Image (cartoon, rainbow, N blue to C red):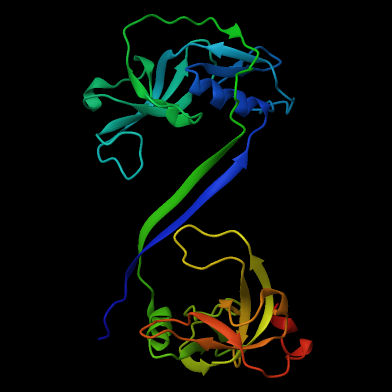
Length: 314
């Protein structure tokens, strides 16, 4: 029985976004240890603030300052914190309605154990020592014995050096175990071969194979070796360098229809200036010593493929 393949994989994407006036004021306020909400037309104060009323869709701009104390409305205990979570020790996820607000804010509560947490408990913000204008400027909430102060006060939302953009990291760590079809595909790549599977109904060859035809919905088992040469069907020029990717920009990433395949796969194009890559370009794989997949594809020198030969694969 063949070995079961598995590998740790990380999907990571730092999302950069600009801020409108309301979110800019909210995050800049956190940097200055000030919590701002926004007042709706019917007088409710929303924290965190939004730029449009979720009920009426009316544009909202009336900012108001609320207290750094509040009440837990609901909670869940986290006994095993994960990477990059706010606290390294066990904590509670909590929804906290700050004094002066009508909605609850999601954050964490530093508590010795679940027995110390309950709905209705009073808490206050523990500010981070170093603040940059992010939700993490609130390090966490902590228990508080004081009474509620429901009043809120109008605020202009104006601060020196406002925060105008943020970078939100998104990351997923998991272990990937391919099935029968993809294991055969990966094992063939380690031998510098590309193998797909043919649908017994429509006779299309899918690369990489999926174990079933996505069109007919029937299982596939017949292996078909394709390529190694292929045709660029479409492409893009990448000008932004990806984190932890040792490839200099600009470079070209393309859909490549390998000869004999009915589905285009992804690959990087090298050995040619970016402005000379084109649809219909004939390419072949380039393998590095010990590599388990093609490092990139380069031009073969053949005449370009006719458009009718690959138009169904766009």
